[in-house]
Image 1 (cartoon, rainbow, N blue to C red):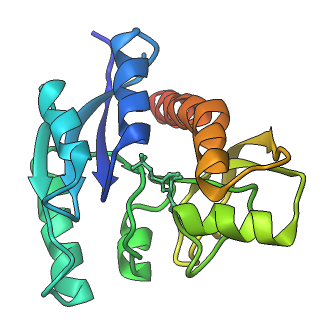
Image 2 (image 1 turned 180 degrees about the horizontal axis):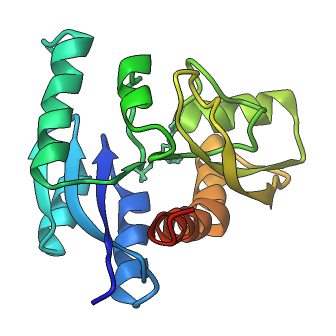
Length: 202
Ligand code: GAR
């Protein structure tokens, strides 16, 4: 039987990118991996409901009240319990240390809602990214899927997709277009690509 890469998805909020991965898998397109666990940094995240509805194991590791080391140890425990080989950050709003990113070198994938290196790094997350893009006046933005290293949004780029900014855009309108036209498409494709190359031993 073909080996499938165990994928854990780290989330903090709504989980629409998680949903895109679930749908991609349900459509039979995730041929080299399987979603084994969803780990949320927030117990109220709607992403947890999405996991439950799709019968995917989930766990909550709250960021609040823990040191960085305690937080990461608790995540590692969850990852080891499900033998996760690839970790997807899908709207995960916590920074990971170099110790963590080194431990899973070339195994952590993040989706960011801009064309890196624009509007990225510390402080650029969620709606803020689109606010900054509109403030600057760019006419094209998009999304990037990249490997995660110790530099926020600084790892090697796996895939990008451009999206047009339109007259009258608000941050929310732009966020929706970037999600629909870019994030939900390239994140699942990039995850499949990485899992496939791990399977091939590349
Ligand atoms: C997405 O737009 C994702 O790219 C962004 O937060 C949103 C989460 O939505 N992530 C970052 O900004 C990380 N730097 P979701 O929970 O519905 O997937």
